Image (tube, rainbow, N blue to C red; front, top):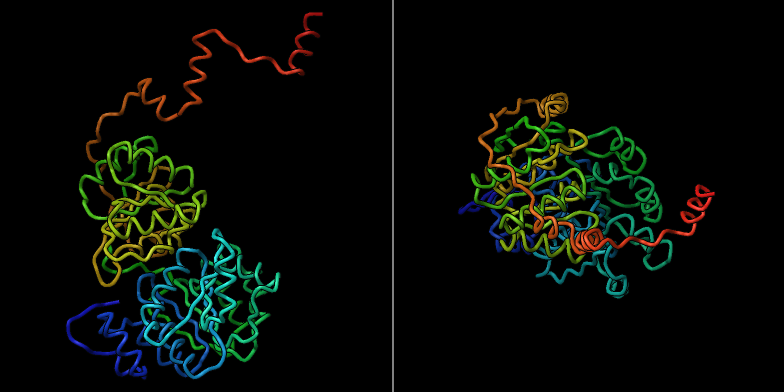
Length: 421
């Protein structure tokens, strides 16, 4: 959302004075295009499908009309999102606007203790913010009743469908009253979104701020073609040229862990976030990245839409994503709130077609850069081998040097006996 010194637009959208005051306290003065188009429609209780780039203020685009309508309704609102991180960030944004009105919210997500979530649900919060998996579990165990939900928001709907949550979404919607308002927000418009809309929405109004798959205009996008084994050294060079917060994307969780370990060994403050990390570890990584404790965050696509941090200077696609749409979501983590940003991708020569697919999607060419002079390769020593492989490698080395051998298994002894006879 754009921050300016002089007040303008929000006062003309039909927003109640109390919410306008809350928005002013947050120093938001100029609505983004998606907010300007969505808020009046949402306030009229209309169903809508809103398509806009990531980082364009979609949370307040549905949050403001949702909060204003809840003040007149007896029922509740439900916001569904694909990841835990997004759920927590949406909760923070809604609390920032609605706390002056005594807004009570609950976050229902997996990977954390059920106890606090159950106790919070018993207090009948006005807004439930949830990921589909944990919420369906609570529904089936009769921990939560959604029959009084009058406003349903599907945020990052395309990502939820990509992650295979369509059956859970159907299950959740079937427990909600048919007399509800449904607002669907997405960065892209795949056929599955239209199918979901036909099935669960009433004459939705379509809003499209930018063509599906469009990247933000203020992101400088570059690509280096490089051998896979040289990526780590190229990353060293890139990090020396950029001194602000950097988000590095790996295709796999094992790759993310390896990249983060290498960066820490080189003296960088780096954290990692992927599905092998506990919720507390993921939260520490994200909050540490926001606060500046970690300059570099290495992530899988779990973070492609799970990070709302203003001021990320650079996004590095260490590995290209599995599909072109994810490229748009990844680079959308930079250039947020009207700021400029940069995205650099590492591609191998056999990935030229993948680059062409990305260019076709975003309707612009990526600037191909010449690979700079790279630092010399590290020569592994016994000390680094011991450090990287841990105590297990050291024990193996000691067994080898001492001549000790592992006792053969029972089956191996039988095969040896057969051969000897």
